[in-house]
Image (tube, rainbow, N blue to C red; front, side):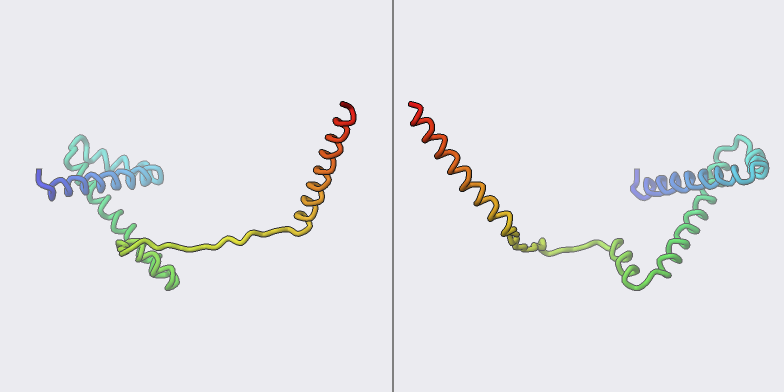
Length: 135
């Protein structure tokens, strides 16, 4: 199978799906009109697919126009960012960021830890001396 025909097949399927979704929304909004349109088609599946494809192509165009309209109203920095999202990014080498962490020392906490350590050493020494007196 040729890649062009395969691409056309996928595109047609996409548009038929869009058309079906659009028709479903329209059926919810105006069920009588949609029923009349589809009853006129009957069981002619090729004609139904053609109708849905045309409706899907129209929906696709409307969606593209809407997105382009909204993006044209964006401020300049956002517009540049949105256009850069669609263009491929080519980086010659990976970027590296060097950071230096400086420890934050709380002097009161450090003094308290040293005081408790000194107290603990004194308690251990006292326990050892009591053990030696007992023996």
